[in-house]
Length: 259
Image (cartoon, rainbow, N blue to C red; front, side, top):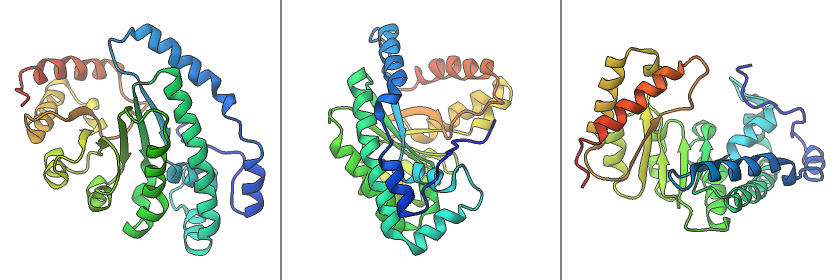
């Protein structure tokens, strides 16, 4: 319905948090783990399977508001007036996230990804306090430390200095800044994933090819780039355009010498 995540029960008080902590059950997500096992069998080791979670901070924004929001009024109120409750929510969500991700690893994922869509709401001090510290806790608590970890945040270019403290393998970036600019600023600390504007897929094949070449050229010929969109794909995208992207990307990228 184009609304994003929706929560029937919100957390805005300590009592709300206590009630939620008493009822969550990771086993209710068995259908996810069973799907992972089926996909692993189908892939037969030919392609890596990426599992994912929402970051504690981003999930917290939804569970505080009840759904996606244009103003995040309740989130901002809690940021300013009740940091203790907010950390309690984040601690709970982090522990659940660790359990959920470890179950995905047990089921067979090859790579893990954390989406922190609304990390962009936070200033630098808040970002470190309410988001990055919990991402690092997840990283250090997953059962297989050899699993590559991808982290995505919107408005990536505004978070680069803070991101340098993050213990991840791959940084997912949005489409607001050229990938070459991000690469120059971040150096070799992370591989980069991104960053085609999803709206390009509404255009014709010629324009899609131009953008593929632009991104690949901007990044350069070094290894460490996972080509992807700069956001999630939207329902209005024709699947045929995705095929055009994939087919042309395979052809064009194979002609670039990777050092």
